Amino acid sequence: MTTFVDPGAEGVPASMRTEEHRPFRTVLLATDLSPASAEATDRAIELAARLGARLLVVNVMDNRRVAGPGTHGRADQARAEREGLLLEIVRRAKAGGASAEFLIWTGEAAASLLAAVEAEQADLLVVGSRGRGGAGRFLLGSVSDHLVHHAGCPVLVVRPGDAEVG
Image 1 (tube, helix red, strand yellow):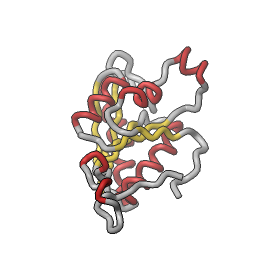
Image 2: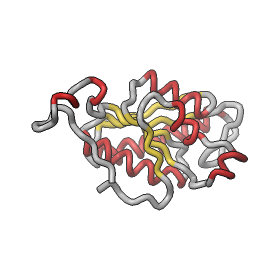
Image 3: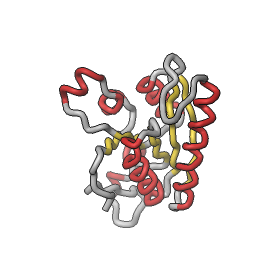
Image 4: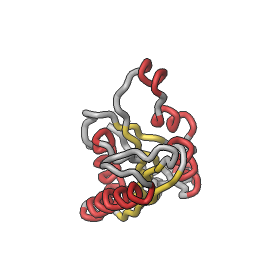
């Protein structure tokens, strides 16, 4: 179980009331809109609502290879399809009590997500993982692994089957 401390809460020691320990104001959800990222989406929505934070849902479109959910052959078709899926996540988040919006970035996934974290001043990055082991990461590369090592904020990696926030 993860515990978050609100530095402004009554009873929190003065030593924890620094900018370094500020509450999470922006939770950035990095999603590829695949079934593997569904649990990360649920966790990010729940965390943002519980923390009173803004949820920023970010999807990256690599124009070198238009890929993702659905069938499309052009970038404009891919973007339109993604916008509909991202709007649905935003609606779910708002229904769950979180303030939410989405962005579509263009470029390579890991680099674009790191840029989004910085530009949007994210306090927490939530990302899904397909649950591959070390050998899978070595052979296939891993966006979540790269983000853990290079993001300028804490990263929560949600693996398939992770328990709910409690």
